[in-house]
Image (tube, rainbow, N blue to C red; front, side):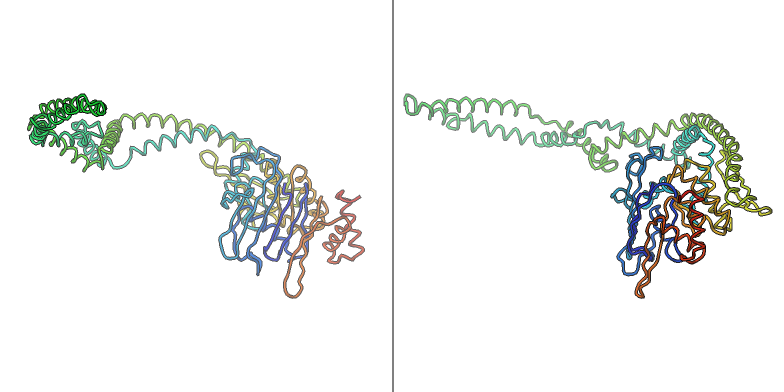
Length: 539
């Protein structure tokens, strides 16, 4: 239920906080006092249009915050995926000079996300275009809920058709363009296959080999020069040998002698290694040509297919896969066509089942709505629930409010009061509707016994949910478990609206005003007491 509503800086409202109870709450007050601002505030919480013009003059922003207590896990999940259960705080902020903001449990959300959550908590039935049930989708949903229509098989069959169509679309397009693409891919795959490229480091290795082969003669000459210096007479080896002989037997230089002997051995090993390397350096012009040609090929492949060899290898895999897919086009397309025939038949069968179920449920829903309309002072009203479309998805509620009146879609019903009462009747039929129901001008154009019946119906609806009604009829307000008075005060400089809960004595005073225009009329007060007693709201 809506436990608390805070409004600040909205229209004639400076700041009010209202605590609501369960059952039926009536919001009353003189014309122009600001009763509809309550509905406007709730409409903002439902994701309604946030126009900066609604901000109270002089205020920086308008703020509407509603605290909801929810104990029905069947309402689905909130924007965070958690069940709608426990306490939910919805908040809408409308700056005077900027874009509105929406919050769910303190977290910033889009207005759409706010509306998604609020729409499962609250139904708003007003005089204008925000009535939820005027939408075709809402009417279809109402019929499905009433008839307990199983939509799962149809949804699954439809999803399979969509999946097949999506795959078939990947094979669509221009046949000539596809043939041209296959020719190009075959050329590229053939070229890349012939290259036999599988090592992304191949070019680096070939570059090192090319450098070695290109300078083989110079390398051997350098090795010979080094060997001459190491092994030649009077050079490195001989010099180290003479130094070792000079220190022979000189104990202070034993350590140095050991190091010199190691140096002699190291020089010998180094000379041996140089000879082996030099002997392996042979000119190979043929191999050099092969390496150069391979490197030129790799450069050409990089120019065409990627910045480096790893990219070229990846591209090779991609085009090979694409070519296989295109070459398998006919076989796969034929298989998909066959699958689609089966899936479409299943979808058509499921659609026919849903259509028949909706058509069977439609008269029952219409009859139930008519029953409630008769108790709401529309005894001659007739309702029709039209069902059309392959799956009966085109659902339209039609109403003839009086004998001889044409049967018209709800959206074209001229009387706001008749429309609001129809919404009330539908709400009474669909007991699984949102737990908070708000009605504005549900009693428009009625009075007397009809008003009593509307009050009784609202009280009955409030037996298992919270109902808030903005009313100008004492007969309706008398049935409320709680009555709120909206009043407006003008001090000459500004006008401020307030809202407060009424105790029993003040309810009598307010009902007297609603009945006679004067809260001081003894006759009206007596009538007010009679209304409350009759409605069992006063003993």
